[in-house]
Length: 382
Image 1 (cartoon, helix red, strand yellow):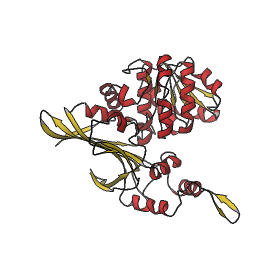
Image 2 (spheres, rainbow, N blue to C red):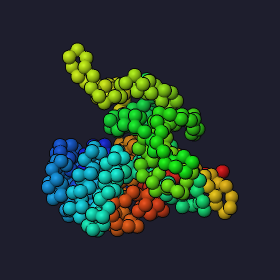
Image 3 (tube, one colour):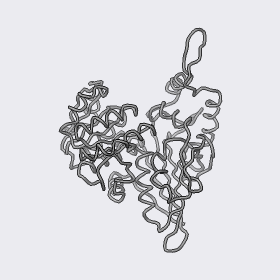
Image 4 (cartoon, one colour):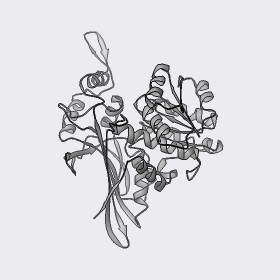
């Protein structure tokens, strides 16, 4: 099979590595970026003859359609606001398409292309990164193991292995995406109803093995994505919280309360600037980046099995891989997208069309593919 990757950033590198070194069915990979040198750098880093770097402007629809043709699937690793146009290009090219998501409105617009995608006999699957993404398929995997399901609680955090003040956090993906998660409202299921609640609220303590110990988790937007709609009428509770080192939520919430995440420009000494843009720049300047990281994942399911009340927990702890140089965030975000792209190309999805991954990706082979990449679930019941 032949796979196209759009975007030669961190996640494009992670996807290219997985396709080149972990995926024997993949014969050829195209890595495309508006910066031709960046695409060549990814190809050189991956070090595989399967990989061909090419320049592309993802805002040029005709150019993208021409590039997509001849590929069995395409993965978008560019900024989320390009994904709707790219999904439309994939339909015209009749090429399976997935992306890393990042915005609920754009995801909804992509899913509205279902009839066109079915007519083209392809899949459009948005939100295929970590959360939403991997955890969405894991939610479907765990849910299928209960006779009746009452609750799913999802907790995820990408963190530095060695936290440093002031925020005990490092830049591991788009700072705009981070602020977005913190300021937009979260969609959850409460008492069987889909509602929205404020992010940076409902802090809880979680216990993880050493060296982590007690961590905090709090509501953030985007992580549930399509899950509330998928599980509507089947659950009393579903929510997603972000895991951080203790104290992070209160510190960042202060920045929000002071208006530093506002998008409306303010004038200062004759210059108009959006506080959010300035804060984002300061975070990039002052927070560490690309240091050894860890991703913590916990899903808890509560329901009935064999007429008994059960709780099942999935835990994953994934760390920076010194052998490959890939961060835990790259592994847990880009690898799932690569797996889904290959499943689409092999026609292993349960249906064609524009669909959330929890509705069309078979969970068991997906989990097996994660395990083959040493992303393994530690399962417990109580």
